[in-house]
Image 1 (cartoon, one colour):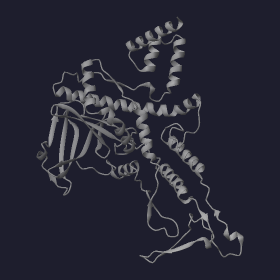
Image 2: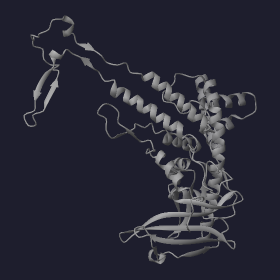
Image 3: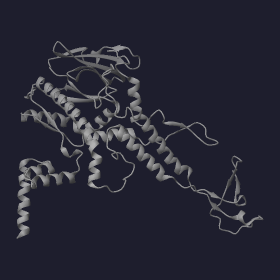
Image 4: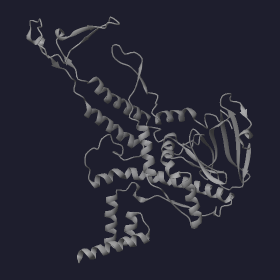
Length: 443
């Protein structure tokens, strides 16, 4: 279970992680000025995190619908997901997966219950595929026992039609192998299961010509743009630091004071002194106090940031304006719709991959449930769907349903179901209430 750099690009994943967490290679810059020595931290806009959070929200902004022909099986699936806080953990998991390129959810049994474990690219390496889906992978985690820390490697693969789980335990301080039985696990375990006990999500598939199966980061080709955004934002913040109010006063108005402890002489202008002073000067202009404050270039910086954000959207398959540094004024419904087209196209692709990931995960959950004696059907047909309202403007969706009803192409109940995301019975009751109110108003 040793990995070479071609299979697991550790340096590339570490770079993605640093950029995502706000510690890019350009984080430290040299101090400027006459007495500038050392380094300072560059002010960061955090666009990598913002981008990945945005993609995760667009992909999974609401709970997906899971359908199966067996209602008891469906209730078991939803119960396992709720017990493991799956819906709450998914946005953060997807955001990190978009940043690092891949992630996986491991399914295992603990005291007779089905449990889920989330792992990002640092803790999971895809090693093999079957019919385009990852079926062979290596999980890596940290375990603490008796005040010591161990690294646990868990290799999942198929062997003679069964899932084989091979484990290895090493001491993190010495790097030496440790008996895996010390933590209550076996070195090798076979499970009579026809599907992998994990599901892998790779939002951007790897290059087929490369040996690594790790996916690509959402900002893989945009690092220069993210660097440029941080540079402009740092300049904007420095604009306020360097553009602080400056007053030019005559030298005769400057007083000196000596620190009694250090003997250091400090010069200052007493802005609170309202007493008449007799000053020695020949020219009247020498007594004038001049405001020499610089004009802040806020608008120029904001325009530059928005231009770079549009470039970032273009590079990541989003519509221009999806990421914006300012509101940008009021837009018509047609303008909003045209801006959403490219984003919707990309999100449909991402949601299709996410649906496959959820199907694989549900199949693993059912396999574990069947092995534990739960009355479920492991061969049940699973269908995953996402609500249509995730990227569609609600006003436009209502208008479209009204037009379809007026044209006789959709029933009123169907329109209410689509708009309110409810069942047919709930839609019928809502229509009955609306009809009663209409009659009451008409007398």
